[in-house]
Length: 477
Image 1 (cartoon, one colour):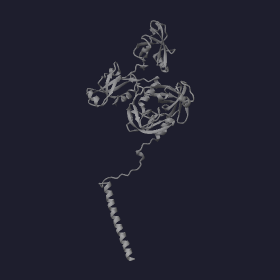
Image 2 (tube, rainbow, N blue to C red):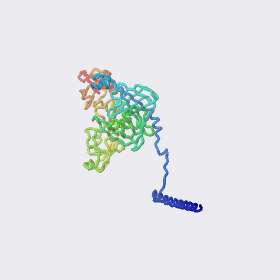
Image 3 (cartoon, rainbow, N blue to C red):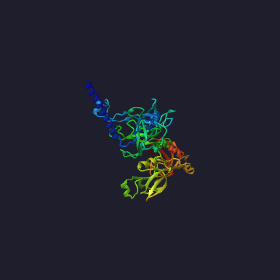
Image 4 (cartoon, rainbow, N blue to C red):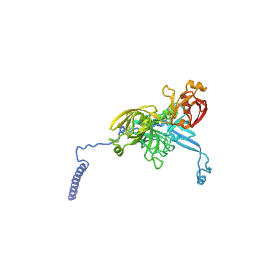
């Protein structure tokens, strides 16, 4: 019996010694495996709320100012097949007008009901209905739109509405957090988050028409129905209007684009002040610079954009800018692509004065540029206290008293000159005294401005030539 106890005791001691030895060796091996240096710091990781962005303030406040926009289009003709007759539209005959309904988003920007959205959301609408986050609905009126920037302004008659203030989209930084708020697939008040992936991004124009594209690219999820909704920063400031996605499926695949507020704000201000966008241009053709372009043009760097051509009598030519110059900055903001130039120029109106920096033969030069307008636009309706205006390519001025007396007129606006534009296309010549537009008497250039702003599709211009002949002209807008 004693012998048995002795054997058991020896076995226990041996096992304990073996376990101690193995444990020590294992500890030594594991210590050496994880660290070759005794001074290597070990940092424990725990959740720290200060290190993570908090979207609650921006989301909860911004969502109240983002609305659902419902659009009704009537009298749209559709041609249906025999298959549609039985399975698609319940027996609708071919080419029978039917009602189409679309939806998007919008952002309230003033407490009295001005709402910004996309032009493609409301284009062709016969009726616009807006529903707020609190489920109240209103009929909205179209104030104006701009196809080139895809921005539109609508209004509801209400007061004390929640609204978003404009932030500075120029100050956005790559990697900065932003929120997209809208109504994807009619899911109202949806908030998604992402970062600024790129700035001044251009996307292909499928219809080939002129577009101003300097989009903010984000990876915030945006889907059909988000168009016209808000892109806000973490302060809850409006920094963009969600407009498009890049997708092969029609749904979000990681790329979304917003019109920056530097462009959108100027467009809506123009619509409110003038009835249409006062678009400024420099009159240059640009080419982006890469290593190959730099080598071909003997450039020392790839910064800026190459000015390939300067339009005759343009703002750029008058400022002394020449083909072959490299445009480096606009009003102190560095530019490296054509969309960046578009974005900066789009902030200004015709006759605004800006400063540009160019590089010519390796020397940097600062030049003042007085921007001009497109001939198809109303350039400047009222230049300070002057009674002269440039309207659709024609220079207008209040007719002299002696001229009116000679023609037996009590009032009128004289066409002083006619250049390329809608006046020239309509056949209006120098010396014509405009007395009525759409049967409304016009006594000053301001009244001409007012009538043009209120007219949507066309105008009828009535007046008298110096020989006394009364002539009428029709002009499309």
